[in-house]
Image 1: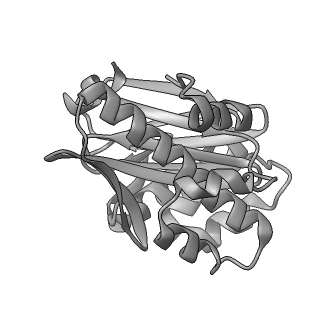
Image 2 (image 1 turned 180 degrees about the vertical axis):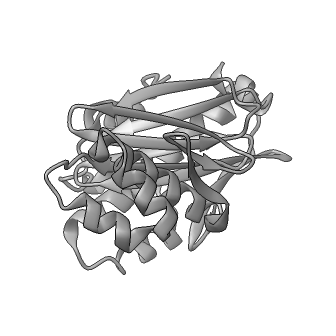
Length: 228
């Protein structure tokens, strides 16, 4: 009962999808809100539109699972552009954060404000120059001194993106080889050519990661096959 733990404030749920290069089947779009479908038309690049649609299908699936686990009939996604949506479950709320890059879409859910950023790990880029352009002179200088600049840069960049999403870009800093956002705990992971950084409330001690596939989502919407 992951949503029971989320509502208790000590757990978060990370949904990971790796097939966003292809758009969702038309039959799945009927499960989205009209306003979401309308907004998707604003994205001119096919992949960006695909990322958006899959992210909303992931969140819509989470709402259904949450409603079932809570036993409540009122469970909806409340869009708050340009901020991330909120899941409203009865009288309670679950915060979300969405990030996408290439074929990847990550959705983070927590009872407390949270943020996630996923990036393709590309150590061959001119990261020292990027650091100078993206960060303060102090932070850029500290990053360039790191023994593993690519690892440090993507960690810092992901954390800074999270700080922006939380509305706290000035509370980001780089301290003792690690990114810091005042009032939040930072988690990071590098795997299979990807970098992922999440900002969570200090109260959150557990993050459950669930990988979703296009087939699993289609089965869920068609037959109610359990996702998590």
